[in-house]
Length: 231
Image (cartoon, rainbow, N blue to C red; front, side, top):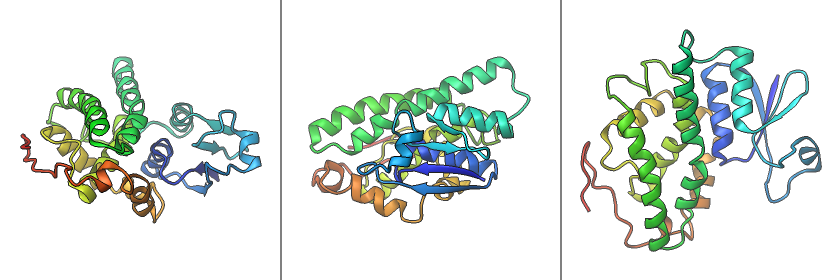
């Protein structure tokens, strides 16, 4: 059986496990501490990072892009019969999502309002680009079927939903098509299936304690409607 080595709140890992869940591919998962990485992990992970996927034959794969490509090559893509142009567009938008995982992490980790506002502003520019790309005519990114772009953006959308629930701040404020996309992606259940049972608790401990979002008394709570934002 495929094995995934993970850090519990890593968005890059969630991208991989969400794809495995969506493809209904059995896998086992082992969680490690990034502060105390075991020797066996360092021996097989060239970059010392998660995710790490160990194939049925015992080959260790690293880097989420390479792992996702392996899963698609080995088990088939979520969407078939796509043109080369459509595949290229999906790869590009998947990359745009994953390259901003760390930006979202940094924003949520901000200790003060000025830092948070600066980082959140940059992150919202990315979300605005997605808003312009979405037609609003399909349930998911470009289809009524879940695809690779949806899985790539799932960690961003999932974390934004938790932040809104816990702090009142909405990263997707004023972006109605993105909000609808977020709802559709989360409604699949893969966000919860792709993380540990204590994910929300661990996520909250990391990002909502001793941070601006967690402690700031002047955090603007969400007053978003479906198409506009106040405050």
